[in-house]
Length: 519
Image (cartoon, rainbow, N blue to C red; front, side, top):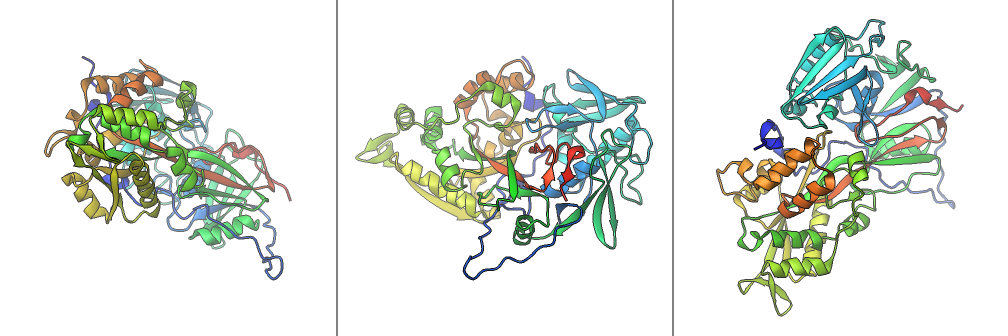
């Protein structure tokens, strides 16, 4: 029998990311900026900046492998190209390489022999080896990807080969890693090959056009303006001091001024619910299917998140081209179907209350108390379940106490969150200790938590042997977790900037060579 996909991978997952109170973004929350009172309020005059400006996060250094914030990683992408980049549909597009081919669990990249670093030197496979070694270091934001990237080597001067722990056709997305010139990071700012070069002096940080770039930018200089909080940032965006800025929509959306254009996208940050299958009344798959049909995801997104995120019943980013091609229903909420599944699972009624073996069901929904949004979502879910006859109470706990309660099984449903890898690997969620503990007893192996049919379906889907619809039919039977929504993000653009903008989850800035500041 074919070995299941995720059994071949060495999954390294930070459990804290599962239920953390925030995403990997930072202060760039898209919050309300009130219009001035025409009777008495006055707008503070702002002088038009002389160069194009981008907001950066002041809470960390800008580094090819160390920057965690979306804003700073966007700046990194302007200075450091990768073998491939991910477009707004999360497809791999050749960047430094001319082409690539996937052979089983290997991806072979044929570098563009005329591609140059910003110092005029050629990019070779040895530079890729050096860069991947830096990206796999303990303090690198890309380190977790190397649980799936099992090896890499210089096959020839301009041929670079990457090996993976599985033969997933989507693993190529994992190599969207910045390439720097070997050794250039020892004492100075690393040399890259992006359209811009990073500079800093006593006057601040700025970018200058890379004359050796494949497409030299129209705008020759970009100033990087530092911000440490959303209020200061949004003020400067709305009043024209900042031309481009990342907006985190994970906690809802609101209004920018009419001089600012918003181009939104869906991030890979998935929020989901996990049902405790070790409870006897949830042991039946029908009971869990009843829960997934009973949850009003659209209501969560509309009423709590101001429609800034994307509700889902499937575990994949809606912006992903594979998801779009599957042409899935956007909403499966159905009170009739939910009642049918609850009845099939022997979750009947005593009067108006849902019961199991004549015992009234009072469900405990567990959530991390540090997250206001997750608490509101848990309360919304509780109201959903009450409408189906369940008793439901939300219990909020500090992170450490919550993880302990999950492992101990002291809950019925918990709310989780995780950023998926760019290869759309959901096994990082399935094999997480907290998720797997919902369906196995203490000390059992998480790999035994799922049926052979499901593991085979996972393997076949990632290997390209089955389509998404076929996989989801099996996923809905197993339901290792219940997807709720993917968080939203956006690029805020001052209308004085012309050019092409198509932001995505892993590529905030696209076509920078087209940007022009209208003076």
